[in-house]
Length: 339
Image 1 (cartoon, rainbow, N blue to C red):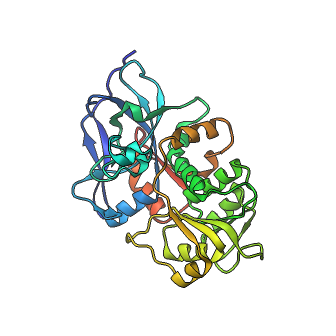
Image 2: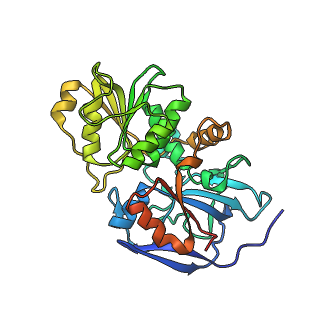
Image 3: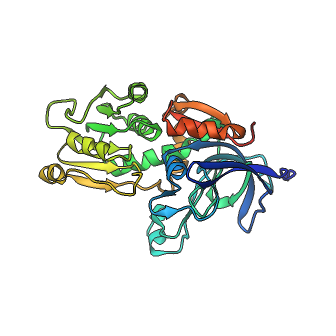
């Protein structure tokens, strides 16, 4: 079955710091191995916030206008699978380098990534993408929830790196959407001894709603017996890293998920050294994490919908980024096909 290609559409392009413009664009042409997608929903995340505020992220700078957005739900509009809703794997690894062949495609040094210069992302009405990087969606997962599956994939990767059993005590530091999904992932894995930390009251409350047993600050481990076994830091700020280190027991580990705004992370080395902590950095998600995220949501083991606090049409993309920058609510979702 083949459906008609969508008419020329629109895209939100970032031209520089805080310079986001809604512009007409031609319908993309699918290349070899690609299919044409109509974009249904795009979740905004911390990396989009960095691009918008700084015009760069992690040493990569904006050298031409860029279409942001890598948390993408879409529907195939051409070929035999037309009409199939999909979640998009945003990373395009080379699949030929030693890193990819070693099973770590998320670390491919030459991978393209949606919404990360120079690869355009999902804040457009239609896009072409490799078919091998699309994951079909069950009817049980709505379009908005599907746009948050990539973030859940990152949470799955972080919990995998934490390498803890269900009896461990875990702290989640930074309770934006990723941190909240980490809490929900831990709960789905059978863990109950979870504490959380966030300076914003509405996010701290959401952490409790997501399954955290209590809230802590940087001077308290919430248990009085030497600290948590693992702290998972999801804020990307030095204060949060210090808080995670303070909360962790001697010999424990700290998983760093947050992306620092200035591409540097600093912490009190004396505390980390004295405790003999293991620090692990989490980058994106593993190749199988998106499929696993779909399975968990489809089975009702992780609920995403309560985290979506703001929805905007593409005409309201400036309002969407204002909500993202101000950290209002929790998850912001944009519908590129809606006014």
